[in-house]
Length: 322
Ligand code: UT7
Image (cartoon, rainbow, N blue to C red; front, side, top):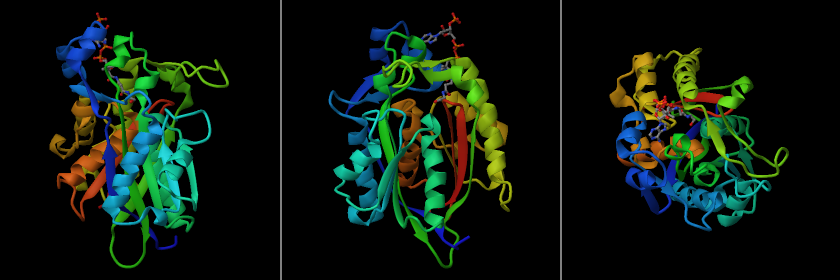
């Protein structure tokens, strides 16, 4: 290839102000704090305010990532927003983000791979940068899943929340080994009925609500994630025992524990933030990443594994030398 490596130059996150606790959820549906914590690890979720859109969350997280990278917004030449809850059917939310950040050059587009969206975006971004199409790319995972939940279905509404996380990615050349080492993406459309939204412009002309067969998704998640993590090491001289930090999609504490166990990775190396914001779909990996970078756990030189799985099914993993 070109000798260009894609490095993470900055991270940012944004969670809406309003927090809804498990106790509040128990007033809406027949559930309890005990059940939610025991089955998922979630204690609260953030919910976007009326009139606060996915693009607003994305812009807030994007601004913070740009500031963290120490660059000016005008240096960004490409914006990718991973979302399954766009502001509108079209145009892409990324284009609203571009305008909101005052950027008038380059290109902006969305990626739709539900909870795997950020990991998909990272792989696309890496190829755009190494191929010379972009020098400074803003990748954002942003969601307002509260808007597609069936608030009468206790099996799903307790699990999800709203939020956004972002990274600034830059091409770097020369000595050093920082950057994205490898990525793997997978999908399996035959599993559509296990996790989907029952509406859309071409089918019902409505937005629809999220439907999930949780137990089935759980089983596939643990197997698919441990398989893809093994695969992402193929062709590298590294192995899962070299991982310093796993930054997984935050869907369920038990999935994180079971996947770490299957891979033989110490659970203490898994970044867990699901307790604080529930499943925020494409936003969850960058939200967890931002937390672990900010609190000093992830340090220069660490080997970081990002992984996610979601509706489609889609799943993927990326290996990054920080
Ligand atoms: O982001 C994409 C990936 N998504 C996921 O990874 C989600 C994967 N799935 C899961 O996280 C878990 O399967 C759930 C958290 C969704 C459910 O946990 P589970 O241990 O698989 O529970 P279950 O579905 O087997 O339900 C056990 C019981 C049922 O009652 P019965 O049939 O045993 O009487 C449910 O009706 O728990 C009941 N239940 C609830 N009870 C209280 C289901 N939801 C609730 C609830 N509160 N919110």
